[in-house]
Length: 143
Image (tube, rainbow, N blue to C red; front, top):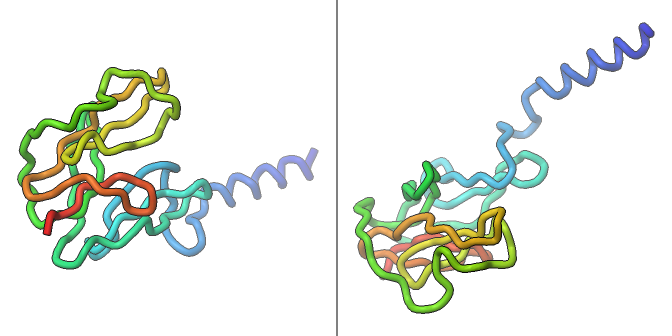
């Protein structure tokens, strides 16, 4: 019994302790690097991992989306303006991979939700477009 209590106390202190090599994070979340030169994702181990650097002449900023979602993006302006996407698979249509983000036309981002329905995340800011960095869509400055 004493051994079990000691083992549980040790496990609890290991979980509560700060992670070695940086702060811990929630799997699947994104953020701008510090300084704002790129985008990071929280990996399966709860550690921040670089997705990609922003193109030259841009900086990482946050894109407000629906349902309180905020995503980082690379841009040279923070002004958001609504623009139409291209024809094709659109928010509200069926999708096959929950959690997968895609460009919605050249100027917006959408995600496949847990019910396999595409949901609109947000528009790219003016003078930027949706582009894939290592297979993940981000808004990047149009140069």
